Image (cartoon, rainbow, N blue to C red):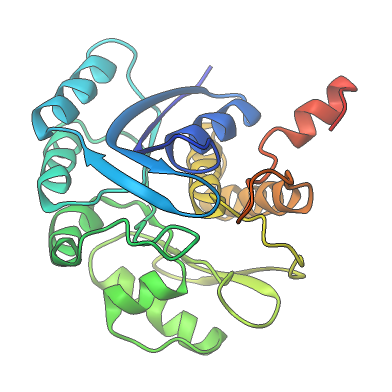
Length: 267
């Protein structure tokens, strides 16, 4: 069984962050592990508080994973402060797992900030160059590049700009656009497009976390990057289509819908 590690924040409501990643790993048949960098008190409506984990404890969690089980791929999610970014960069640079997928989580689904304003430059300097795949949404790509993104042509330009900043491939997510949900992959050489009709629902909590975790799982399972992105796109689309009507805000997606369906359980 392939092994995939998530380095991210903990979402106590279960829809995003480490919890979403571990469900996604389970759905893709890989063994999931976690390094928690922040404990986030949040639900489908709001973020109540964030408590960051000490950098030395982040490094010890990484030590615990890599000295024993190891990892075939790593997904990096929420990193809120420069201190935790430096710790994660230090821990990964000396181990260099086969695949590193980085989701630059800056905002919760309800708009609450999850990355401190002074952490953007350290992210660009320390974390972005580690990425085999970077998976920003449109607002995150605008913040990282300084470009305005209004259409697919702008997405292509931003993806190339992010690649030039040091990451090896970019999947720019189009969920914040106004037309169909079109994602653009720039693999350093060619552009690839993934488009599905937009689903009319507000239950999309944790979709970015889920998508990047699915890509990491696909790469660990031996898929090419275009194949991993295509499969992840289909997976997250199904999870959104069968989203769970839980909570009073942006509800969670159904990470295990296909497994439940195949088992004949009530989905």
